[in-house]
Length: 278
Image (tube, rainbow, N blue to C red):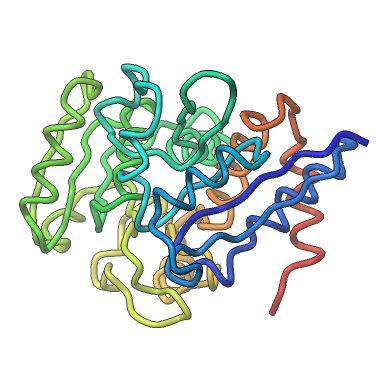
């Protein structure tokens, strides 16, 4: 059985289900996959030291997560024109040449959206949070044909920087920035939480008062899957795209990049649901 060595570099990843996802995907494809959690502070090493260790120690590829998605970019071959402006990477493969980077948060959100809402464009979208995952989702929304994207962040400079980065790929998508989610949500079709609020069931970046009249909602948080935002949105009749679906589809895309094997997302979802932890 072919062996594939993978890993994840990040600071707060002890509860990550990525090892489980990739090992199950490997089993579906007849591959023996190992997947290590690599936490630089716990190893007493810098991110660069951990990255270089993996590059020269037999790893086929890595996932990269907070806070290293932007720090890894200078270590890679140039990102393509579709992702270069994003300036963040969460999937790296090693070979004889320079490491290659991709962002499967971006492609994974697009796949998850199309799977959940086939044939339906996003419309007007208000998104709270413009950090790492928010950036990837914003670029995916441009590719999905979003009519208008309203970027909401208490750090207005961060939202403006994302708007500037999006401009080359935005096409006909209008981009608005505001610190006020109440104003951003007015008349929107979709609502997105791209902040950490809701993790472990605590907090909500999008107040219940803006949910009436909206069509769909997405929460990037998937631990727990039923965040306060998701629970409130579902109760008001919004169609829900969960953070678990982003986790699933970004993993499917990353596994294909790592191994060249296409995994059936439905079967992988079934296996992950069957082994999910409380």
